[in-house]
Length: 108
Image: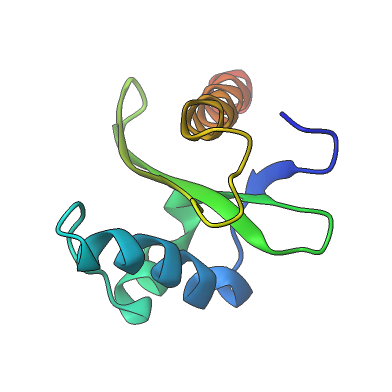
């Protein structure tokens, strides 16, 4: 992860930014369109990477089906800001999900 980028749990305030990232890819036929309302209903599933200005530059969603089964459902990186690289963005998001799962297994 870059020193000026932080990956953390998404907040409701970031729903529009997540929708913009997703729907930019949907416009190219690479993702399904997701309304801000749909994202807001599942905001607890999302993590975001934010730059030093607080702008969302990458995000992802983890769908948990049971304590031992989950799916990385979505991952996007802002290609305009060139978040490190697309591969690095996906690795940072996957790492955040791994940390979340480890924490859940310790407290759960």
